[in-house]
View 1 (tube, protein in one colour):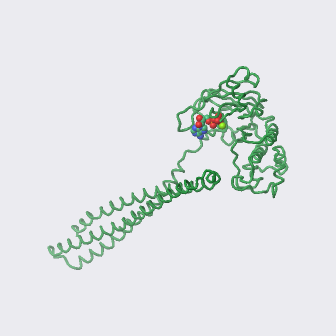
View 2 (cartoon, protein in one colour):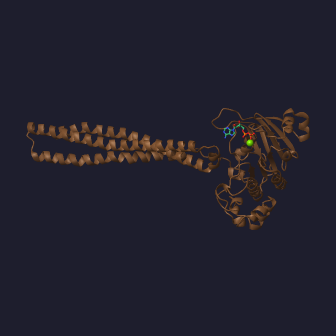
View 3 (cartoon, protein in one colour):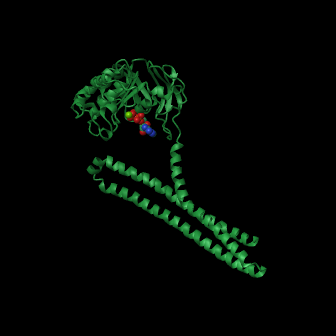
Length: 421
Ligand SMILES: Nc1ncnc2c1ncn2[C@@H]1O[C@H](COP(=O)(O)OP(=O)(O)O)[C@@H](O)[C@H]1O
Ligand SMILES: [Mg+2]
């Protein structure tokens, strides 16, 4: 009966429209939910890791509130998603019920007018029932589907992140370590502020240069550019005459060791930490030698299981100076031609600093080194000192020369702190 069938086709689309509207709500709420779950993990992690700060600054209430807020948001949106899902089922059922009633009324009318047989009608009803239940099932599949889609979107956001550009083809053998910065300007991605302006730097093999300047003047940024943690927009940086962008990233980074202020240690043994990422694995002899050169022998031997001692999360069981010496041992083992020391000796007591200075001096010999330091003793012997100011090189020279010609250097020197924060 074409008239009846037509009636059904007129009434069916609303089912789909309603299902779609609910589906959109479910998807939106699932999105918020997922983001809030991430936030909750983040808050938990922060407050557990920073438990000392939380306690000393009386931040318990604040953390509790932060957690409560996000937990509450999750509850709210989960509830909304559930309501939307349930509403979907109810609305679909309602519309089907209405459809069926309308069809029954109409068919009865047609039947009376056109003298259709009861058999025909019955067949039609059965067919109608058979079509409606898959349609309902389709509508109820919408909800898990939408939740899945919301999750997939979050995953694809991460997958779609741009890869580190690695278009270089040069594989470098062990380099000499000649680095040249030529008119380099740089701003961090997503910011307007130029943090480096027209930088020109020259390092020859085995040279030891130092960068000094007020905090925020761009010293660490210069160090970040050499292993290409960021790419420059203007100017060029070359290593042994090859533009950094033409060198394979891995090959470039194999040439560089960095010891910085924030040392990352993994939840693993001392041994695993200082041989991190090295293949082939260095021999025990090499490892012992590196430990010795880093002045780390004594404290490691006092650990309960020597080099096999697990360090706990982020090396929580070690002091600042001990962590630093592990990082230096790492750099000794890596034995690269290029070395970057970024405030490697800050926040240490005089005796530990002496120990570390001593091992750093050993480490620096025969390497091209960039030292960023805020203590005079670390840089007084540098071959060349660059004084940075607001992203520019203010002046350069040896310690004696700079004392003579640079007002800024004299100020830094007199304050006794070459990177006053
Ligand atoms: N990841 C980053 N994103 C945006 N701006 C940054 C980033 N890191 C540093 N900066 C900015 O760059 C400038 C130079 O910072 P930095 O090189 O760390 O200085 P320094 O090491 O001399 O103290 C500062 O103004 C700082 O705010
Ligand atoms: Mg810095």
